[in-house]
Image (tube, rainbow, N blue to C red; front, side, top):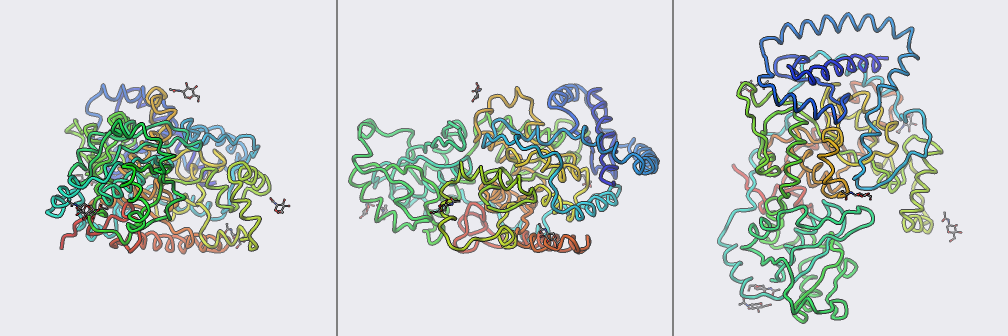
Length: 623
Ligand SMILES: *[C@@H]1O[C@H](CO)[C@@H](O)[C@H](O)[C@H]1NC(C)=O
Ligand SMILES: *[C@@H]1O[C@H](CO)[C@@H](O)[C@H](O)[C@H]1NC(C)=O
Ligand SMILES: *[C@@H]1O[C@H](CO)[C@@H](O)[C@H](O)[C@H]1NC(C)=O
Ligand SMILES: *[C@@H]1O[C@H](CO)[C@@H](O)[C@H](O)[C@H]1NC(C)=O
Ligand SMILES: *[C@@H]1O[C@H](CO)[C@@H](O)[C@H](O)[C@H]1NC(C)=O
Ligand SMILES: *[C@@H]1O[C@H](CO)[C@@H](O)[C@H](O)[C@H]1NC(C)=O
């Protein structure tokens, strides 16, 4: 009931906002509590409306008028209260009627999250589920009332800050410092070139990023010259993008030139060599996972010295984190955080995207500077202080069908869900099924859930955000591609948080067109929008995007870039009590869990340097 109420009120303000937008007037009418927020209800607008709204807004200066606000505020409240009372009466009578309105209003999620250029072109509409899938009705109702109570309270600042900001801000980026060690090393490499390393990296954008930086370290380890890495075309990602389509080649070579020789192509005499027959191809099967430097020296160096070239075909996660000589560790870090800069085409569109998410707010942080380069959006309007831009939370829901099917978990969708996922596995993961059929012990879906191996559903993500205290109007940027189950799965989340947008909502089809068929380039837009968010909420710490983005926020965030990392296992324990647990108890436990995930540690042994850059090779700690 309360959800409906909230929704209806929201719908009104959304319409109002769209009117003011297209009229090119003050769009701050929903302001409450000073500069606190603008509830624009932008999800009601289509991308076309948005573009139109933007053009007109650009034409009108001075959109900010502080003095009007108290009156507006009061006015809105009186109206809202009257509306509330009226609606409550109506709602009891017209419950079923409202429900249909609710559904017809609710058209955003599934259609807009179906990114055509999404990572995996799965269409999943043959299922005829007519009702939203909910696993925790009781908790959702409690979350809705809690959000309703909070509606007119001031937004808690702590939600947008790192709790251990002071400790975090002591760590400064410094992987690009030049030291005597580097110079000694440079000369040695240039004198002692052992040959050429070719790399064809596997996976999507983020796996490839890791592979590139590992290749840089391997080239340095072997005193070899690195040829600019190639990206393998995969049937899963279906993206023919190459290095230069995503990263700036010149910047990459220039940044690393003191440490590694990098060239664009093999010299002519080696191009003629048949690498296969010469035995110069090294695949991931030839190396152990997270291999040590010794293994490279033993297995790869002899080939390199003999043939003058080695091709790592399908290179992935093949260089361990510890032990590794200090200069190689530092080099990897420098590669990831300094040498890989997105090309202007990506930066420009990402800048537009971020500007629209922030509702025209100017740029604020070092993260912006790093990721958007010259396309950083400046705040030209002096009347508009920096801190009036809309805060946003970026959410990476790793809940696409591949992940969902792979997990072997169940998500409350009953028989039809079970059959659908099984059918998907038969097509896409036959080896997994084969392995399962052979193994004696079968782990039940309940056991998988208990042990924290099930990806979080949109519903569970909504419960986490609501327990933490994010308000109903919170502006959420949703990263990733098509959510499994679409609209019906998303509904618990979009009902609690209707201001949820994707890049497809914020960019017009024309602006997105150059990226359409390039899933890695689309993923780069998500990468940037997540890294520059005021808060980044991940749902799966194993995901490469989440992991690299959280590393970026640690490296460049200066203690002002909070990342929320729920523990799937702890959450599963709490939610197993979904029929009995009280709301305040779940709030307390979730807050504690998130708080613990935000403590400042230096990198543990064996942990990824890309994800945990707080270590002496990457960052300098002030005392
Ligand atoms: C080149 O590397 C070899 C080992 O591979 C080493 O013995 C030799 O001293 C190095 N040469 C120079 C000039 O550093
Ligand atoms: C690389 O060069 C350094 C410095 O000359 C040398 O110490 C090292 O042994 C060489 N490594 C390889 C694998 O050639
Ligand atoms: C906005 O920034 C100004 C100074 O830049 C500061 O005085 C003010 O307190 C800030 N307001 C909020 C709500 O953070
Ligand atoms: C499991 O393996 C057995 C025999 O190897 C086979 O008959 C059966 O069809 C397999 N089951 C599945 C689900 O693949
Ligand atoms: C993208 O791919 C679709 C089909 O795969 C094709 O019809 C379309 O022309 C492509 N668009 C661009 C811009 O390459
Ligand atoms: C919800 O609670 C019921 C009753 O305690 C429990 O059986 C069920 O497994 C819980 N659901 C989940 C997804 O944990």
